[in-house]
Image (cartoon, rainbow over all chains, first blue to last red; front, side, top):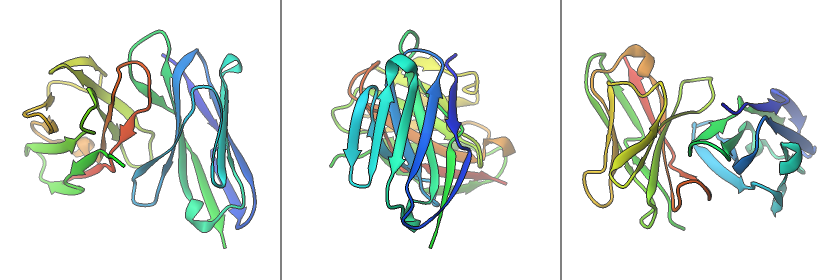
Length: 110
Length: 114
């Protein structure tokens, strides 16, 4: 099956800093989503972005499908941005399941 | 904005008991899913469901698990005889189309098996 690798596994920032999270995947995809898992365990949809670039407030994401990676940018980070960020992809050629990466644990300190 | 809702948010049960987790997908969606996340691990696919039958399931989804759409709005996951290792967060998801488009996730049901 498709492999999804996220980096870095852990990231500690001071409030106000910017960061870039990366997601590499091993095969062609027809779906890519970024999620934020908050401290209560809830999965929050951030972006549906199989290709191209999207922005939502301080967050933006870019997927370069031909090179099999996606980036999530967080600008002017806040303590409420803390949590785990997951990338999940759906393989183009088989099935209809999302395969999640291991996630990036982000801690934003005041 | 339409959303996927799940109940209960947290359930504690004794090993060997049956558990039913409930989900109300977004009303015009046709494809439904269950995912599981054991504490500290990544989210894993369990099963997908379309047109009143399972369309795909993972190796995790063994005979202890079943899914059902008992009426026009609910989608349930049943665990027949819970084990300690079933303790996890269970997420329901839905979408309009089967192989493309965004999956919308519920907030999850945390199951603790004692």
